[in-house]
Every structure is written in C-alpha cells, then in structure tokens.
Amino acid sequence: MKKFTLYILLLVFANSFGQELNLPVFTQYLADNDFVISPTYAGIGDNVKIRANGLTQWVGIKNAPDNQSIYGDIRIGNRSGAGISAYNDKNGNTRQKGVKFSFAHHLTLDYKSKQFLSFGLSYNINSFRVAIEDFNTTYDIPIIDPAITNDRGVSNNNFDAGFLYRWKAFYFSLNANNIMKKDIEKYEGVEPIQLLNYQLYSGLVIKSKQNKDVEFEPSVFVQMFDSDKRSSTDVNFKYRKFNRKGDYYFVGGSYRFLNDQFFKPLNVGPIGGITFNKFFFAYSYQLTLNDLSGYNSGTHMVTIGLDFLQGVSNCACTKGTSQSYYR
Image 1: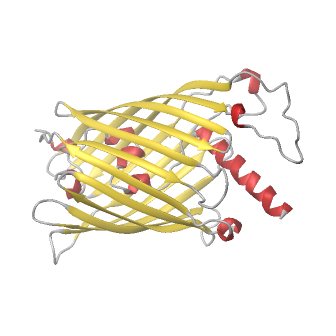
Image 2 (image 1 turned 90 degrees about the horizontal axis):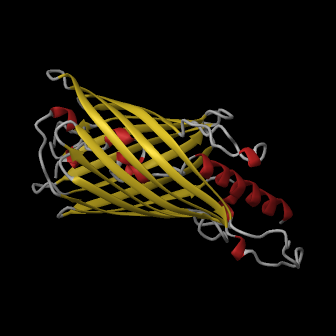
Image 3 (image 1 turned 90 degrees about the vertical axis):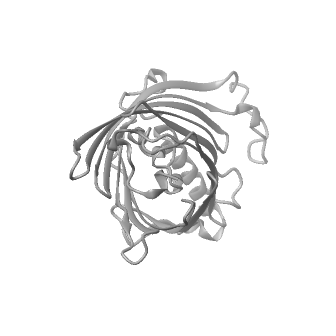
C-alpha cells in the first residue's frame, strides 16, 4: 500500500508539472476540433465553431485531475481567422486557469494542386495557485503549518506559434508552445523556467471509393518537452459517415505511448460522436494501462458543441480537409 501511495504522488506531481508546462492534451482534438492543438486552424471552415469539453481523469482515485475547457473560432474576411479558448483545471490541491487568444492567416501556395499554408499565433494568460484553504489535517499531519498563509499563486504570460501545411486531403502542423521563459526567480530551482514544448499533428482524410459519404482519417499527434526531451505519441483512427443533410457520426480510437516505449501504451480507448442540426456531441474513454489500472475506471471526456453563422469564403485557403468543416 505504501508503494502504491508513493506511485500516486509521483503521478500527480508529474501531471501537475506537465500542467504548468501546457494544458494537458488528451483526445479533445479528435472531437473534430483541431483548434485545440493549433491556432493555425482558426477560421478554417464555413461556420463559427464552439466546443466545450469536460474531462475527469482516473475515475475512482480521490483528488484525481479534473478539467473543463471551451474553444471557439471564427473566420475574419476571406483569409484570416481568430479564436479564443479558456480552461479551468483542478489537480488535488492545485488550481490552474487560463485563457488563450489566437490569430491565423491562410495563404494559397498553388490553387490547381490545392496546396495551402497557414500561420498562427496565440497569446496566453495562465494563473496557477495552491488551494491552501482546502488543506486538511490527517493522522500523520495533525496540525497545518501556520507558516502557510496568503494566496499561494502565480500568473504568467506566454506565446504559441505554428504553421499548417495542407495538400489536398493531407495536413501537417508544427507548433511551438510557451516560447518565452517564465519569470519565476523566487521559485527557480523548484519550478521549470523553460516551458517550451513542441506539438506535431499530421493526418490524411481518405474518401471511400464505394461511398462518397464515408471518410477514413488516420492521424498522429506528437508532443515533446524541450526541458528534458520527454515525448509521447498518439496514433489515431476515425471513421465518418455523412447523410444527405450534411449531418454525420464518427467512431474511432487512440493509442498513446512514450516514444521510447512503443509496446507499453500509457492509455488506449475509443471515441465517438454525432452531429444533428448544427449541434455536436462526442464521448471518449481512455483506459489507463499501468499500475494504476487496478485502482480506477479510466478517463472520461464529454464534448458538446455548436456550429452556426455559416458563411462561405471566396478563398480556397480556408477550406478544410474533411466534409465536417462544411455542414
């Protein structure tokens, strides 16, 4: 039991450490919301797209991470887009909130071959604090340290930048997140100063030759932290089926692993969703495949959304790779 408790503490600390580096990415982006990963997707498509996510990690473990987030983007003119996202994250006695403002511009490299290039930039505001008001005494700690007072919190500003290349149904994006070092002189040596991390996202939308209303989409998502070179990869697959009105449903799955441990997945799980009259709903589940698997029922995430104010651009550079962008 002592070994398990230590393992839990290490995992929670690792998650909190990663949380300060960047909002943890699970499978939110697979709920047909690529804007979760990259600001370069702002303004791609014919609709204003809103997505709200609720995520509960490691269900069954007390004080496990819990997260809520919302994303929205809109096209500006024919070649640009803007977006905003906000989140609230709880992990034990730590609290983190943030908001991100994004802008993207889209260019046509070659109209005949359908090659497009997009650039995106985000400005981030994050606040991180320890909820000392939630501290409780235990048998081992009968008295709370009286030196723990005031609001134990810190705020920081940062930037993300990236580019997106599209060629017909193929897409490739590369992003650098938290480009600036965080100003935490009084915490130096305790917290990481270098927050930079890279995210690569690539995939291909394949239309069925037998049925024009069916799409297959394999994709990969890679994340690497510059500070210690930790990296992980998601291997994903989705199947979409559209009806005559443009509504659709999709099913798929994701397999996540550390890049030096391909055959030892961190988690694996299915995802599915449906759209109806501009409304969107999706659910995903991730089964934890490590020593924690015997103590929790996995990670659950629900996404709800709305697409509205449809408006077609005169520039092909804002067209997405899937029919799901044009309902």
